[in-house]
Image (tube, rainbow, N blue to C red):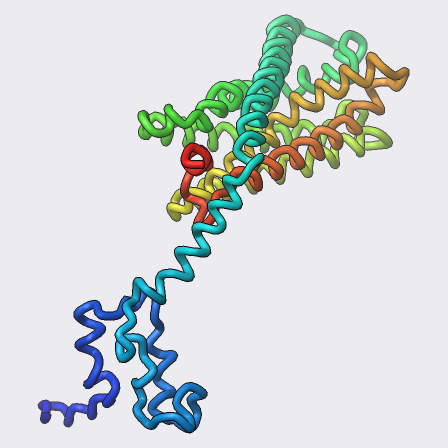
Length: 326
């Protein structure tokens, strides 16, 4: 056929003969990669055609009368079914249910610890900020003085932290997420902004002004706070970018990581209280050590839960839906 600019190039024989069968759905292109059969135009290179037949399409599925559903979809379907069976096999559904209940109980205890710490720090600022102190070091202990001297950073840390502890749990309550999607989205945006501010101010206070200074045990505390703050920032950024890309499973996992890490501040307080009650070690040593302990525990807990509830396939299905069918 002639065109104004040039003659039309000849059509490949394979495409001319069999494209109509692809167009009308006799074979699903989602399951068969036709490029795999292009080498059949040279039968000497094809293991299924050499020494058998020179017909380049004699071994294609539709030549044998085999439908896509019979052959091509079955392996993927069987694989997905096997993965779901393994996911929902005993005792995993029961284990997930028990861990979910235990997890919410622990989260409630950590939220109580965190909120009481925030309220206590707020009362401290309300009491001492109005006072004019010629020498704050003579009145305040080394732990409290940094909050007095950097009151703006402290306020910018406490208010976002209160928002995080208030909105964080709501992000993981499934009925709220399903019925009130806009509320979930706006809470998520506010949660991420508050988390970024809290992590940045926590980095400033904990890394540059550890209560024991940057020497000795103070350096230990500063490094723990630095790792925690940077990790939180990474998780929040990843949570935002994945949901923008509509990668729901990955978004869920990064949100779990961010919330678990920020709860680590409350976990640190619990460890400090337990160790001070059971040992003679001073808080100067325990504070940084407890921070590393809390970080290790939170990372282990969040990764355990993520792996237990990561559903087969793309992970977009909720684990409760699969367990309900088990």
